[in-house]
Image (cartoon, rainbow, N blue to C red; front, side, top):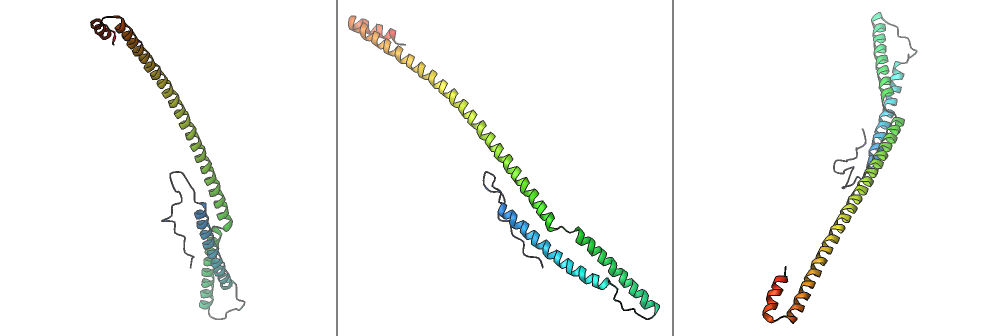
Length: 185
């Protein structure tokens, strides 16, 4: 009987807007797989030992009819084939060292992915900062032009009102209104 598998269905391995890899959850999964393989290998070893004991010649020669001898040979051949098949299965089963190698490869792949993501985020941040800097410079330039234009117009209005005020004080009242109206833009 295998140990219960950890449940990852409700717990994501990647969280949030950024990428956060949950290596603790991956380690838990690898440990479970390793325990399962160890349990299976120990059970296979016990069964292989039993089959070897059955397949080994017992040392007791059976005396009897030819049918009994051929039946024993058939059974021994059958057991021998089963032992060979079981040994192939044991040899083909993943070993703990294979799991460690897969784990190290996966860890290296995760580290490389993390590095690539960090580099991508850094480049994106730099690009955003350059764009923001350019936009800020353009806005500053436009505000300076607007400010200069407003200041020039205010100076013109001040000059016009000063001229209107000085001409109003030197001209008769009826002439002042027509001159002031003509001076206004």
